[in-house]
Image 1: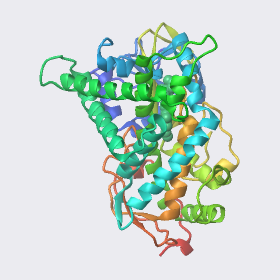
Image 2: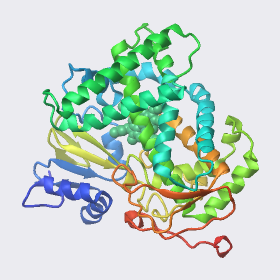
Image 3: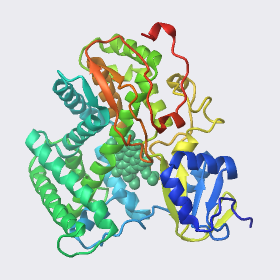
Image 4: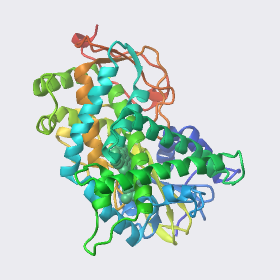
Amino acid sequence: MNRIPGPHSAFGWRINMFHFFRSPFAFQQKLLEGYGKLSALGQSVKPSAVFAFGPELNRQILSNPNFFEMSTALVKIPKDTVMGDLFYHNLLLMSGEKHKEHRRLIQPAFLHSQIERYGQDMTLITEQLADEWRGRTLIDVNTEMKKLTQRIALKTLFGVQNSEMMDTMGMLINRFTKSFLLATLAPLNIPFTPYRRSLRNAQQLNTQIRSMIHEKRQESDATDVLAALIRGHDEEGSALSDEELVGHAFSIYTAGHETTANALTWAFFLLVQHPNIYANLMEELNAVMGGSHLTQEKLSRLSLLDYVVKESLRLLPPASIGTRITNAPCELDGYALPEGTNVFFSQFITHRLPELYEDPNYFKPHRWQTIKPSAFEFLPFSAGPHMCIGWHFAMQELKIVLAVLLQRFNFSLVRNAKITPNLMMRPVHGMPMHISLDHGTFERVDVRGTIHRVIEYGVVPACLKK
Ligand code: HEM
């Protein structure tokens, strides 16, 4: 079989991975232009990492979980610890029958009807945040969106509604996730290490979630995700154990809130930098909502809002790249891959292929009136058995938050702000914006940062300029 083309380096494949992490979008674009849809880093005979681009390779990877498995190589947390309890009962780290069985048990919490019920909480919590913004003129949209998606997750997931409890849970989770990253680098169980700290944080969090499970078992009318997980069981009557409930509740929470916050942040950014689309969307919102309360029926009539959300997820997907590892020798695009090869597939590159999307680097929400990409052509929530279980939840949340906040405030970027997305689409210097009650002024402003490398702008009609 032929060798996979790709960049070589005297220092091995890791040096290329370093280039990738330093400049992920430009690096992938260069691989695509230089070597085509499949390229290998390091030696091409036994590559340690390959990058696969485009819908056909996405399909080969994502629909063959028997060969292309979720990689757990980076996770060095011992399973039989309280940290392991939080971490390993997690859909993303399961495979085969076990994954199918747990997904079936969790699915009821994400049924259409259930998600529509969460819609009311999403609206109320967003309105509360808007009330808190009264009197403010400058916000960091990314920080505010994280605060908001965290509150929404705590309410819809655990049923937590009093602000004291929200703060306690938020604090415990943030503490654990921060210490956890350091702990995975050096899992040494000795005093004063991040690992020991992380164990302590995990224990507190675990105890808190368990006491919520205990209380929830006494409530018969709770409608949150945790209650649905507790009630869920399959045809044989088996249900999730308390240990599994803790792990799933924690992982659903962590999988859901930061991705959604980043997606919201970029949707705001793209809107304010495209004044004509922003103006059109405000017209639609005013016509459908007219300042009144948002309902599911009204939400379904906001078609431009739907296109704006899809187009933001296409252009700046919060999960911009995915990874798998081969668990046996196999083939990809006709090339042989040995066992243990790290395989990267890229939402970012797929969403920008000109054969799939005309003017791929432009923000053009109206394209969604006519295009209908396949599951492997548009995959902000991935595809195949591990496709995001919360995608419908997230789509609803994105639309509700945008609709409520855009109705309440006018947004504009701070001139010359540095706007730089990282690999996880977090704007590393934040997203500073002016907010005001003065609707009707739409203006694109100059910004700095690497965002210019990934977005191209059209011309703004003169009537929308100041
Ligand atoms: C814009 C927001 C979101 C994005 C972009 C996103 C993206 C993704 C992606 C790409 C995957 C699959 C990863 C892979 O195949 O390697 C995934 C899985 C998952 N997501 Fe999301 N997600 C979002 C919101 C949410 C929300 C709101 C929840 C829950 C409330 C959630 C829960 C999960 C879970 C539990 C999985 C694991 C599914 C499995 O392995 O079977 N996500 N998400």
